[in-house]
Length: 308
Image (cartoon, rainbow, N blue to C red; front, side):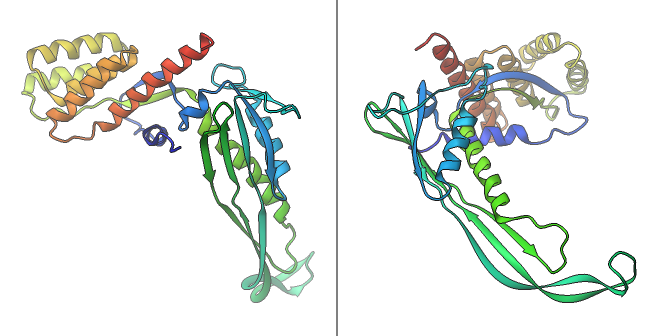
């Protein structure tokens, strides 16, 4: 089953830095997991993960999923599988084998030309033969729903690391250390894929005034500046301005942010769509996708809280 792509895009967009001088609305919301079908399960068990590094990955996944989720408690009940059969709603299986490829490479290294290593008076660079170790870890993980056997999640994500060790290197990072880190990263990525997020996020207000007369442009500019002190008043001002001059994309977009801030996701989606139409193809699709995701995330969180 494919992930909900739009939700992944939203997370990346929110991670982007906001300009220092930009005015923003800070908000909080529930975002669904990219693999929503998995997130609707209540319990998960980790079955055998084959391969040399399978046991380590299975333990890392169990530890990660047993930690606090978006509401401060573990999101899934992590079930130890019994010989009688699976007692969990979903079962994780997979394959995890790391490989290390060794090659010789030439590198410029600095050596002591005069004196001793402890008290060197002159250094120079020479070509040395060094050992290059390329570590590759490409675990395959899948999650099946127990009731019908449907595969809800199947991913293979490759990680690579290159370690170069030259003669007289004082510190050496080992392939085992690299593999251990990759195992933890693989567990983190799985959790990110299947656990919803309850996040604080910030969206920049739209400040473009093209198409406004001088008086309206000044009024709009003042309302943007005051929005950080009194966002409710700013939203009221934009609504009044939209009544005087309906359909300006900046007003519609900012009113969409007002609705999103208040949790009116349907209203926000409508306003973002109208802003996109008014701007003749402006980039407002991100707002539409975000509030759709927020509506789904809120509904899922409410259903889970009710025990559904």
